Image (cartoon, rainbow over all chains, first blue to last red; front, top):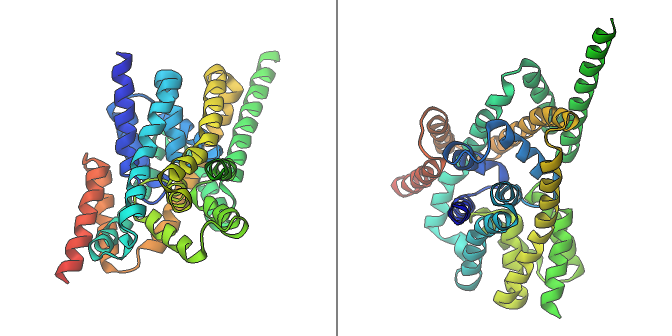
Length: 188
Length: 175
């Protein structure tokens, strides 16, 4: 059983690693499909929490989430196997290009394929907002907060780490005020 | 020894690359091009183009490429293992801590605030990339088509990505 899930972890993250173009966010619909919908390794909300954690840690989000999810499912072995799965495709592809295909980006077919992949990456990230956001946005206050953080990052160019830190702070303040209210209600 | 130097240089960059691949690029510019002279600026532009056009995180792609240029296949292994070492250590630390404290109400409170922040960040990235990649009619059509397939059908995102690449190829070769 355990070996079985190690293999599943390896091939799942191999698949994710091989199809991740355009940086971390574009692969979120792919990771979510595999990790949440297909294997139920994480719930909707846990998935967002994993993203919050792996974004706050140095390194690529794809690799970080592979390590985190692998650890959660199968401990240290799971973490290392998932990490290898996520990293191997780019390692092998880049090595082949570096050795044989120095002019890879100048091929007409490659450029043509990329004229289609680039807009698809934009669509993947837009879809990620809806897919990852749906469980969170059920609460109205969360929707308003997400809009606020969107303005902070997109309009005011606030660094991702600062956006995440202020999110954590907002959560703490909300909780503090709630517990205070409950305490006051108890003492009355 | 060059392999150890490569490994350590990428461990160092791995530790500082918070906030995605593009932070890594400015680190590479400083450490690899200016300080160590392992790569020229022109080669750096190649690395960027290749990273964009191949799967995988930019950090891994550039580590593999630069490592190979400096010390062959072993060099690319040393650099790639270097750049993921900090991730492995720090994520394992975070995962271990979270396992113990995830149910704590204050930790849960922090996460309840982190969730909308993460969504806001992804939405910001979506706006940024839409502005920079949807530059002509075919790209807008492909993006809209892909978006509709992703939201309203159960097609696997990988299939949608493949279809978009095929759409790009057929457009270029037909028109």
